[in-house]
Image (cartoon, rainbow, N blue to C red; front, side):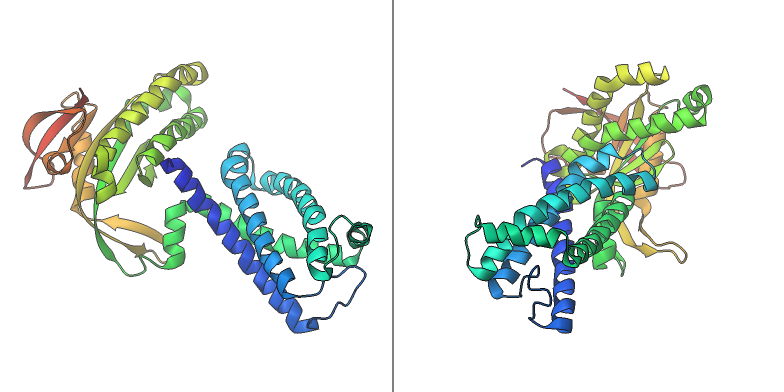
Length: 361
């Protein structure tokens, strides 16, 4: 299973959890009000153990369907749409989906309740009465509640990042923690010149395309985007993931390959050639939630300052990628070459760092 597939699955599963939890709340609320009585026996289905089991299975299936649609398709289709347009178009799509689900699952639930054959005329007559009843309107409202919760999760997760949202939700970094992490600061070359030639609107669109090109290589290398800072992106790995198979180095060259493959499209759209440089370092950071008016999960530690300074030296050494000796010593054997640039005194630091230029063998 590829890292991208695992990531998609980890993002889809919460939709099923949300759908099941909302289903429980609705069932418990309805049961506490009316008990196990069918107020409208011509359309309602009573609460029985088989029906409740089937309802939970159906909720899982529907949640997974909604999650798959959001993560794999709709997120990309509506990436450039306004929030209002997203809601409108998604409403139409999910309305169709819900109608299909109801038409498929309602006769099955009726069959579980009564023990009668699924394909009998009575099952489908009851379905017809249900579709024109107040019970159907109530069901649509219940589905809308679950859908709203899922769309809120989707929007928050998309904007904060899946891992950041889960960390906020679980309170993982509510109290500061110390971790060893690998950081890569990746900066676009000649960004100021490019921005001046394109204007801020076209430059913004270029940045969006530029970051989209980086997405798959970052996911495939098990990295996480920590920050976007203008034309600079900060990627982070937990120590084990970053050094495993030299993932942090591989990420840089995979991004380079992806950018080279898309260079023709960028040239055609913006008339510029895009390139970048990067610095990578490893060390301890303290991670925690900070902020009063706005909460963020932030990393603090000398490793961040050092990585930024290493990246800034790329121009001085005409290098595209520089890493520190500390990181090099942790990496397993790989298909990369390392050329020492000596021990360098970095700006603002007394301790020298040995730097290496990295290439592919």
